[in-house]
Structures are given as structure tokens and as C-alpha cells.
Length: 380
Ligand SMILES: [Mg+2]
Image 1 (cartoon, protein in one colour):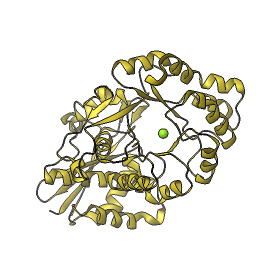
Image 2 (cartoon, helix red, strand yellow):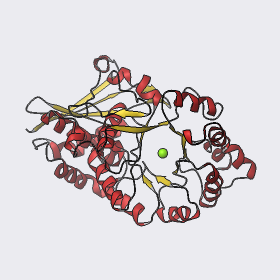
Image 3 (cartoon, rainbow, N blue to C red):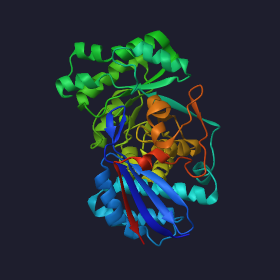
Image 4 (cartoon, protein in one colour):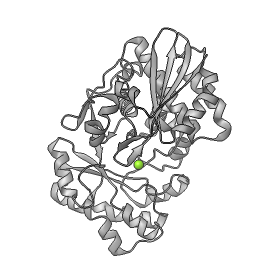
């Protein structure tokens, strides 16, 4: 099997999801036996598309697509002068995802089987609360509605509006109390029945983060996510030693080399790579394997598009050190169905093992009929 064509697709008008219109870039890797693999990245598809065609396609055309690790290194070599992150690494991520999809289709197996098989029969998920109910104004109603559908873990970010007030540089006792009110109310109503993860989006400085972390302690949240920006992992070590609560970072770290710094600084208790950014399924798996050597679990970041969602479930099915996988109810139940058709919903808070072959997901016919579809090909 040889790679014959690299195709990219994107929708100029974007797709309206929780946070407004989002544009994904989809990559399809075509081969001489008629099979193709599908991958995805975002959120700057014009830039990612340019990298795919100008810098990476020449490394792929004519090559054997089953040599995923070697192709990854070849692509990394093509862009490594420019560092770890940005459109270059996102483009690699989408291609790597497509190569795994292709490998699964060629073997007529779901991708998790190629990764080493399932390590569990079902996959626990937590809901990231981009929901129709607001965690700021209706936290108890939101938690109740999740519990009703069997979901017993949720992620909220009630301190973000407070960070906007002070720039994250200071916090008063009143702001601290007000910001933590949704967490307090959920735990008061449901106690241990609902695990609550607290997300901070890197908005705080170190002294504020320490104060907030200590104030969270009485509620025992599942974790504290990205309290600081991710660029100084030694500062995270100080934060980690100031609280007994587990920290997690981050979808904003790229490649195994940045995660090495996280591990060596003991900066987090859970790692959260995003397959569509970190360097693909290959890289996310390597990072999760590295975490295992530090006796740490992984919780794949899955707040992007529908192909990422499928890839995250395949990875989660396989990882021996999975903690839990992220998902967004509004995505799989509603907003993604026009793009990829019906998606499985969790039952009692768990997803079934994902279908194959490959990633088991494809773009719906409606995508190809959209007038704003931008399609580009590089042919070998
Ligand atoms: Mg996050």
C-alpha cells in the first residue's frame, strides 16, 4: 500500500458548537488500494491546511502508510526547527490520526485493537459542562440532569469570571467564596455521588492559585486543572506541594518532550494530552505510557471535534492507565450529528468500546454538499 493523495477539507462558515462557530480541518490520506484514513485538527484550519500541503505532503506521498512511527519522525524533522506547538504540530496530529484510521481499515479492525486491544469493557466519562444548563446559575439542576442520565463526573470553571475581574493577579475573600459557590452547592446537594473537576484555564498567578487550591480542599474535587499557564512547570511543582488535591495539565503541552518536563517537575497527578494537538494518537499514547512509569494516570482531552472524539475513545479503550475520558453531552447528542451522523451516547456514565474499522467515524454526505466546503488535494 502506498500513499497517493493528501486531501484536506474545511468549512469556511464553520460549525456552530458550544463556543460559537468552530472550523475544523479534516485530512484524508488516500492510497493506491482505494482506502483512505480520516484525521482532524483545529482551530486555525487555513494555517494547518497550508502546513499539510506545503511541508508534510512531500514526506508522505509514495510512502507506505503503515510505517506510522517513521512517518511521524519524518514529519517532525520537517517542522522541528519551529518548535513544538502551533499549526505544524496540529497538522502532524491530524495526519497521524488519519494514518491510524487507515491502518485499522486495512486490517478491518477497530483502532484500539491495533494499539494492543481493549484494557476494559467500557469507558468512564466525565461531562465538560458546555451545557444548555449553566454551571454558574443552575449548578444543582445541571448536576441533577447529568446524574439522571447516569453521568457521575463533571467539569466546571466557575472561577473564570473572577479571574476576568482581577486579571488573575489578586483575589479577595469575597471573590474566592463567590467563585467556589457552584462547587459548594453541587457537593452539598450530591456529596460523593458527583465528582467535580475544577478547570481554571491558566488564568491565575501562583499565590492566587495556592489560595484557591486550599479553599477547594474541603470539597475534594476530582482535580484542579490548569491553574497556572503551562509555560513554567517548575512553578507547578510549587503549587503541587502546596495542596493535597491532584493537579492536571494539559492539552496545551505538545509532544513527549514537553511532557518530560512535566513528569520531572512532578507538576501534575494526571496527564491530559489532546490527540488532535499533541502530535496525534501515536504521541498521546507514548505520553500516557510515560505517565505510567511515574505511576500516573491519563485522562485524554476530548473537547474538540467529532473525529477527535472517536480517536479519544479508541485510545481510552486501550490505555492500561486510563483515569477517565472527557466528553461533552451537547456534542455527541446534538451538535456533531450533522457532521458525522449519529454517535454513541454513554450508558450509566460509560461509553461502550468504540466501533471500527479504523476510528469508525466518517464525514456525513451533507458535509460534501455544503457550499462553503474548501477542498484541496496534493497528488503524488
Ligand atoms: Mg483544560
